[in-house]
Image 1 (cartoon, rainbow, N blue to C red):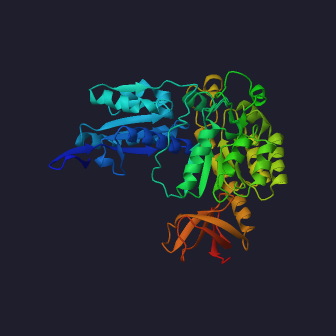
Image 2 (cartoon, rainbow, N blue to C red):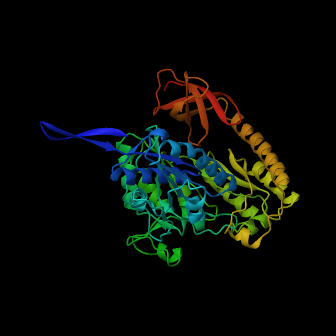
Length: 472
């Protein structure tokens, strides 16, 4: 604990210990964004963030439940933290987020390592839960909310490079994809007020940030009604109401905050991204030409079983429409191998989808059955682990080949790159991202993190573009 001094009079000083919190985040960008909200709430209660887990009074693991291996990783981490607990009997350990919401009281019973369990809508209650533990009790709050958006909380930027930041624009998900646990761990969709989002973007601009990413489980279904986030009647009806703000309108509102600050967004559901969003991207140069557009499978029957609400042909037409309007738009994807009842021929449809859509890159996973989902309740996980692994390996091979082919076409091209870090291989090189969210490596020279740098690409790998700087 750090010590701070409070001067009561010229001759009297009282030393007060300031408590330390340590936060680890797992899973998606939404979790990392939530950790900044958690940090802000705890800071208001007198806690200071630390990178030293051994000096912490409170350790929070902000967890993911989307795949079984993610949960196993967190269980292993909790076992490791047993040593911290032995060295500091007053240490408080909390499991937060989606895994907490899914397992609830089970976590409190497992190996007596967890003191607090709090779901994604319970973070305001964390100081109270900590106080309950300090009084000798275990503490839990996993109630889901239909209203909580943490709209007015200014996030505590954790481990930031001072260049890029997340802005959460909505919470929850209404898409009942049969494989996905998110609607059960994060609740129903509700959008944050447009005014609070714009205000946060303005604050980040004034603080010198060069890039922001608007986050949501499905950003394109964002809809804010002037009187509040309506979720109890059809969105089509709300859209006709006065003062309603949809995602295309919000994107424009954020883009004009600072024309020199890049704007990104994630994630888009193929069924919801509209031409209005694409036209808004075209209208503003600072909105990056990049869309993360998860397909999950390349076969229409499997997509129907997944409850994705579109076919292979419809998905391809959406990709073609985006590229018709923005030829340089980078598109990435999520893909699941070995979903329930997937045949070998259906798996091959996923391979050809990658080739046809020419994704810049993909996040690729084996299907992992999650308890409580529609697939777990109504379908049989009948593809063997060996088969899932083989199919995933084939998907990775095809995607890597397509990625390399895409990258090779960029040799000789000059692009604007936002420097966001030092290369892991050499302190003489910086790394950054171009508009299409591709990693670029270039000589450091006199540039620094946070600079926009023109880079001419000289060579490439599957995952990186390597180039030299170009003077304006």
